[in-house]
Length: 243
Image (cartoon, rainbow, N blue to C red; front, side):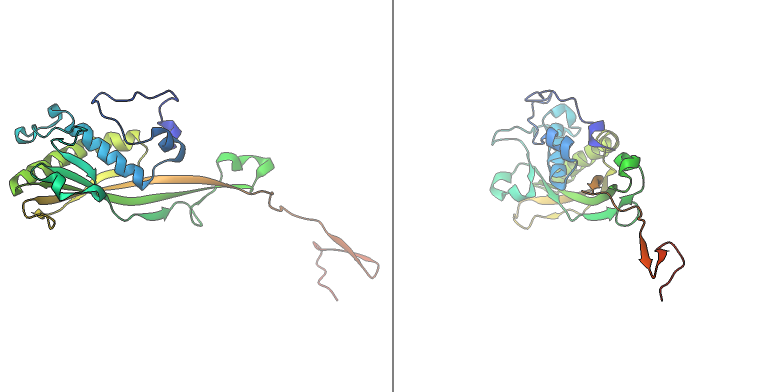
């Protein structure tokens, strides 16, 4: 699916959405360039922020007190793993988002070459424009952190339930080939702290990247060449093999 199929009209977006949350994703950049792993990191963070910005979205009564706010004293910390600081987490819960390795899986033949379609279909430019596509497959890990083992289990259950509920509409509306929970890790003590536990939740994703290659000059379709040898006309198309 091409990003223009689901991108909103080119109108100035509101500064804040319904949950009063400022998005960290530049939608215009996403629409012009398609998905990238860094944008998926921001999207997952925004998805979690919207969950925890309203206590009505939280099922567990124990977790309803941890409401996300933009201020430093937010009830829950939701950030990229690179911004993790044990002194900021302290006794409040945290969800840290980390990108894992991803790989390139070309579509079509010959390293992603797609026959026909697009501008290559015009007879005047036949062969001058080729279309290619590949699929990037990777994952993100969401580290659910809290002060006790039981509270960490409850926090991870809240995050897991929200991700599962959102999987289908995300794949359907945002042009992702895949967006699904692939693994929930075992609970363990956080190495950087003696008072916090962590449960990792891995989310797998895949998106298609397509592009066109346009040659500056059309490829040679054929040629006609006739030479003269000992008074005889010789054509390269003839069975003549030389002296």
